Length: 126
Image 1 (cartoon, rainbow, N blue to C red):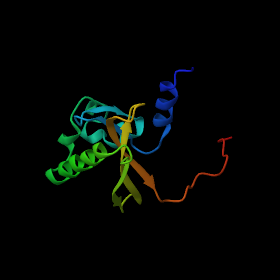
Image 2 (cartoon, helix red, strand yellow):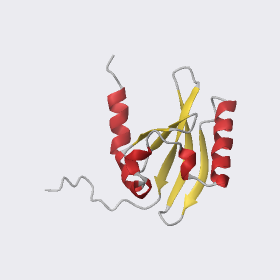
Image 3 (tube, helix red, strand yellow):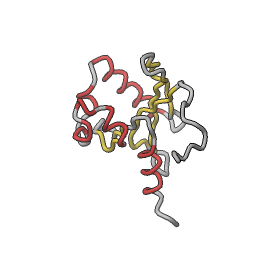
Image 4 (cartoon, rainbow, N blue to C red):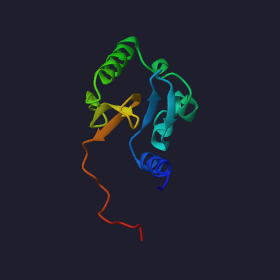
């Protein structure tokens, strides 16, 4: 079987939305290039290995803890809507990450932008 980790990493790395992956201790284990750029003024790639909780206020930390507890309650609890960012016109979700047996191993924040794409269809830049 082909090693899929390189494929999965490439999918995340090509995403234009910031992807920050955390373990259950809230330690940032990975940031895609969009996240490194988006969070540059807070340290960018240097945030890997740091606690995500250091980047949030008390109310947000409490919400993150509540969501992770909800993820732990059931293997069916995997996605929760957290807020709408009006400035960037996007919905934001927290997503559970699970191993092959369904055990919770971490989480990430998913950004879904509502703006219509402005790129021309199949524009190869020629």
